[in-house]
Length: 141
Image (cartoon, rainbow, N blue to C red; front, side):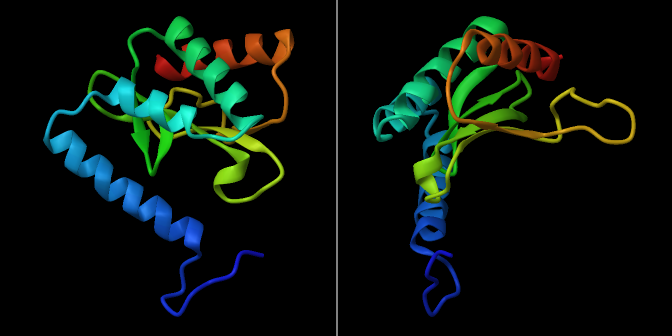
């Protein structure tokens, strides 16, 4: 379990909040979201960086209408209305055992009364790439 401080937040949580504040300022200044997402990926340690680079390429190819940006310091992808659709969370971000490809509530993944909105990613195989491409296309609508 991550160590919390007197304020009740872990160092990782505080870093995510600082990243989000930086993102809000960048958005107000019309900063280049693609550059911010790529910089976020470049800062990741291996093997997260390799997964992040591959997921970025897959999202851009599967749903070119989504625009890259960051969300709490993570590479993320939003629709034309600015609504966040999906994001990549490196395992190293919160010191967990797997990276996550997550989808937000505006992602069009609805299937009956229950559906997954996050997927653990430990390796990039042809099957994983195909599944990610399918999910992102569906999520983007």
